[in-house]
Length: 347
Ligand SMILES: *[C@@H]1O[C@H](CO)[C@@H](O)[C@H](O)[C@H]1NC(C)=O
Ligand SMILES: *[C@@H]1O[C@H](CO)[C@@H](O)[C@H](O)[C@H]1NC(C)=O
Ligand SMILES: *[C@@H]1O[C@H](CO)[C@@H](O)[C@H](O)[C@H]1NC(C)=O
Image (cartoon, rainbow, N blue to C red; front, top):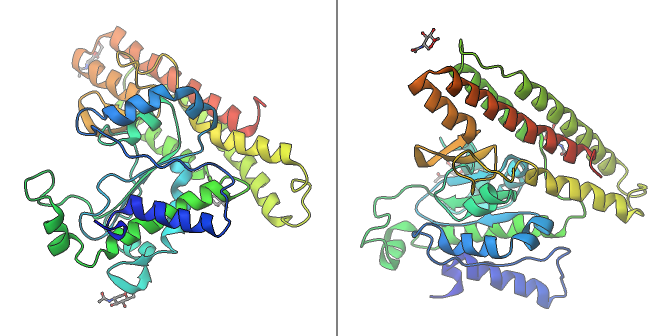
């Protein structure tokens, strides 16, 4: 099959064309194909574990495309600091089914206009996000289709029904490539943590509803989210200042300050992980996003608190509610840590 019909090959082809014209990315781009996804995400997991030191010290982002095309409409999930970048990139890609509008227009007009989160265990972003805390994106055109994982899920189906002109494949390759180019080339990483703060807050509201009337205090969590919010505002004003003074900013001639800001933007996601991991599931180290204990595909915000609440609701012992409180403290601790990293308190 030609590269036009395979988003990953097409992306590789375009990057190589750019290279032939003399372009060199500021940051390295690694193209990966995973084996054994259906057998417990073995390929990507082994690779992440094998390369943990390199990945945790210098990876900016991971961009996942699993079922690239399965129909019409945009289906996107991300860790929240990448929301804005994803939206901006989608404005630059044509809607494959209607040349007069953008992928963004198509996306916003549909029911799935919300950006999903990466707490589920359903695809290869799992090890990147949930084990080592790498900012990640998962992108597709279409979601859910009748022949999924069946005998009929083949090239003939794609040519006849899924994407007869292969324009949707081109659209996936385009948004994938645009996001990759901006992440690899921009002097300051195009991360915006303000929707992360909103997500943390929404998660806290959910937890609050579920522990209402129980002996659990959420004030450590609220305090840490406030601290995170302040860090977001601080970094935002640094970024705004940088944009305003683009041409003669003191930053321009100060690579150490640029490096410092980029390190903070990159390492904030890492700070949401904790070495001990979720209680009883130590491989899952991310305290904000992880699969539910009761549903591997179900994405949970604060999975550790979710597990503890489910147990406490069943047993209703004072010990079980203390465990919920313990989980709240652990979550608050990583959020404070992330706030400290983002605001530059550790550099
Ligand atoms: C294509 O998009 C334009 C702009 O949103 C809209 O007016 C038009 O009806 C669409 N065409 C089709 C065939 O859906
Ligand atoms: C980040 O996103 C927020 C909310 O959308 C926006 O107000 C802010 O200007 C953005 N920051 C930057 C540096 O673009
Ligand atoms: C849980 O235990 C508390 C204190 O022992 C009791 O007041 C409450 O009614 C119990 N709730 C349920 C749903 O059993």
